[in-house]
Length: 329
Image (cartoon, rainbow, N blue to C red):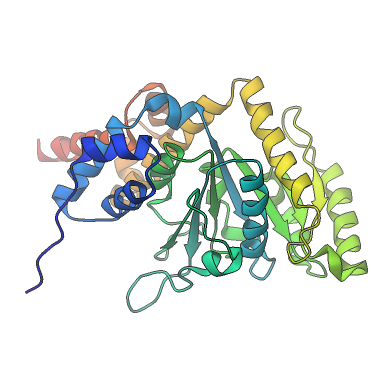
């Protein structure tokens, strides 16, 4: 029988992650992915020990979404190159389709091959969506917190499942939608309402010419008929990951949205809401709407969770215990 791997000390690990130690980040993500009860307890301690100001007010958490084949991975690799030229430390969470046999990620280290660079300031983690509705893995939010403690940019690239792939907008500061030329999907997404979600739109593969220009014009025209809430003006850009064109402008637009959030004092409350919605989703998956109503309803839970200053596991475990205790009495 194989011996189980030893679990790390969460306090020491939190200190190393905060010191931007890449190997510590890898160990922390492994701990979060470990389903054993003792690992769960240590993961909760780890998240509670990480510096809260860094997790909720610093760094930039970006979501990259779009239909399969739009070139999200190649665009991510091109952005990595730009960010590193700007001396930014970059962490990537690449959510892949799950293997139906092992439950693990099918596409593995695809970004390592695409980026073509060995850089100690770039960290890439592939993880499986494990059938999660919405194109993300359940571990993305707590893993994002760990990454924010160690990197300037944390990018979440979703699995690419089409119109259902909207959860990324509930877990990232800035959502970027990648459109593909000569594909009707992007316009259909707009009509279905999904295009109200992104803060930046980019048509990749502009080097194909006329088809890219047509898609760009269609998106700009459609966007005008669906004004974005607030005073942020959603940019519609074109780029070519293959040629490296338009990538600097895309990086600038992503940064501009982060600055806008900070100037309007929206960054911290936005991240607290992400955490609250992540917890409510996990509770709903385990206990259904009956459980949510027993805790006071979704709106009361949102109000409670967004004002608390605790780690996600601590909040989730406290609510779960409250539910179980109520049902025992």
